[in-house]
Image (cartoon, rainbow, N blue to C red; front, side):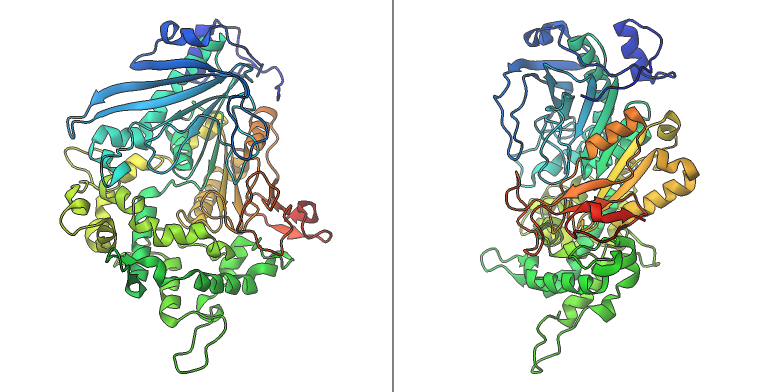
Length: 580
C-alpha cells in the first residue's frame, strides 16, 4: 500500500486529531499508516454517536462474500454500516426525509477516507465500494483499503410517483441536501466514525465522483475547502441547471423531424436522427480531424484542434433532394441543420449563450450519445430535473401527470423566453436559486488552492450531457486566475470518443485514483495518464470499439492543453505518443 514520508502535526490525542483534521490542520498532516479496527463491527451502533445520526445496522461481511463484475478479486472482509442523518417529515409533502448512507470499513484499512459521490438525481445509497471511475474499472477503493461512504444525498427515490426521483425537489431542504448539504453533513460524521472504529482519524481524505458526482466534487472544493486533500471529478456537471436546459432545448430541435410512436401516440425522437445518420457525422469528423495528432487511427486526439478545423457546413455532406441519386453517406438537409443548431447550443433572444457548445467528435456514434440526446432529455432525467429541482417555483406534479400531459410535453414546451429565468429565481420558500444551490460559489476554488488541495478532472470529449468545452473553458479561467501555480492544484484530461462518464468508441479504462493519491501524498503531479480500450477478453468489454482497433489498445492522455501526438512505432500503444 502507498505510504507517505513523515509529515505530521504535533502529537495529539485521537479526539484532538479528529478536531484538527475537520478544521484543517495548519501544519503538515499525519503520515498515512495502515490500521485495524479497535472496535467490533457489531458494537458500532452502541459505541458510536454523532449529532443527528442514527446507525440502523452494522454487520460483518466476510472476505470473498461479494464478487463484482469485471473485478477479479473478491471484496475483502469489511464492516457494512447503514444509517441516516437528520430524519424528518416534510411540511411540504408529508413524506419522510433523511440523509441515508452506507459505509464499508475494511478490516485491513489503508488509513484513508473515500467519499463516493453518486450521480444523477441521487436517491439511492449505491453500494459503497469506491468506484474509481472510467469504463470497466478493474479495482475499487474498498479493495485498496479505503474506508468508503455512499449516500442518497438526502432523499429516497419515490417509486410510487410516476415521475420518480425528481419530486423531492418540491421540498426546499431536500433540494439543499442534494445540492451541497449532504456532503457537508456526512463528511464530519464519517471521519468521526472512522476515528472511533480504527482508533485514529483518516490521514488523507478523497472525494471521487462522476456526472452529478463530479459536480459534488466541484461544489465541495468550493464550499468545504478544508475537508478533502484530493478530489477526482469526471464529466463534472458543475453547470447542471444550464446543461439541463440545453438538453431539452436540443430535443426541441429534433422534434419537428420525429414521428409518433404507434402504440403511445407520443413523439419518438430517436426517429429524427437514426444511428446511421450519426455514423455519417462521425465519419465526417474523422475525415477532417483524425490525423491532426499525427495518426489516422479512428481517435480524434487533438480535441481543441478539431473544433477549429471542423466546419459543419463544409464537412457534413448533405443528401440531394429526390429524385436525384442518393449519396451513399450523407445527411438530409433538415437533420444537418438541426445538428448544427444543437452543437452551437442555445442562446437567448439577446444572443447570450445559455450553455456551452458541444464538441465535434467521432464519439457521437456511441449509443450513450443518442440515448441522452433523444431519450433522457425528454424523460425522467432532464425534464424531471428541470420541472422539480432546477426551477423556482417547482412545477406541480399535475404538469406531467395530469390529463393528457407528459414529460415530453413539458420538455418540448420549455421556453427560453419564459422559463430560463426560473433557474436563477428565488421566492419565499426557496431562498437559494437552483444555480446557487447546484453550482460552486467560487468555481476558481481559491480557498481549496490556498490550502494545497488537488483536483483531478477528466472529461469525455463526446459527452452528450455536459459539454467538455464548458469544462475546458472553466479550466482556462482557473489557469488565468492562478497563473503558474494552477497546474499544481488542478489538471484536466480529455478522453477522446468517450461518452458520458464511460463508453463510446474510446479507450476509457484508466486509473485516475492512483494518479491522484500519488499527487496528494508524494507530490507527483500527473504528467500523463494511460487509458486502455476494453476489447474482447476485458473484464467488462466495450461493444462499441471499432473492429479495426486492437482489443488491447492503449492511449496517452495528456493534461489540457497538451495533446498526445504520434511519435512513430506501434500505433496501438500509448508509448508511441508524447504530450506536446
